[in-house]
Image 1 (cartoon, rainbow, N blue to C red):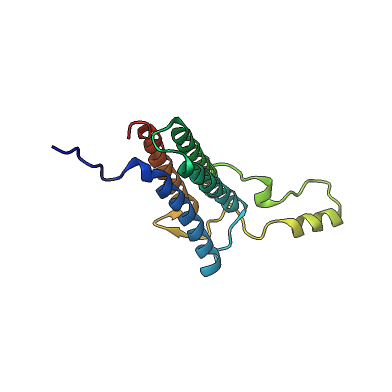
Image 2: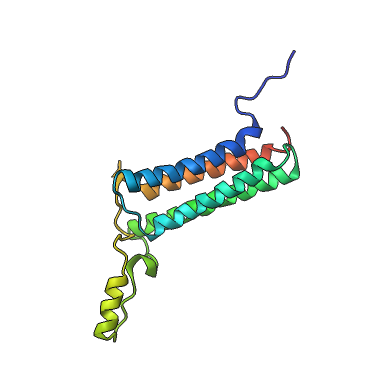
Length: 167
């Protein structure tokens, strides 16, 4: 009796995860350039995690299957997705007013500023606010969907890392 083939071979995990990270960036660009949804500073930060995931995914792809190096690369890829999810969670918290955003989200206006300094601070303030979602569906913002997506990818790559030595 032949061994049953898995529905998803573990060797495909780095390929799929890397493609999923690229897909996240493509969706962000489509939202930005196709639908005019301008990103805020925290939106850009979330994209950095996907760039890191793509780089680590390529590293994982280049490692021989069933080796410790492939497993380590997949764990690092998992960490990239967890980091992206953490940034997305922070962004959701800013949108929901659970906590304040960073200075990059609102600009810095301090008491005692001169008129010129105040004018410069206003001119340097971001056009897109981090605490106002640009788009929502079913009450969930893009940052919220990104949180769910990044967590799912983190779980998927962690599964792949755990199984990569066994497969």
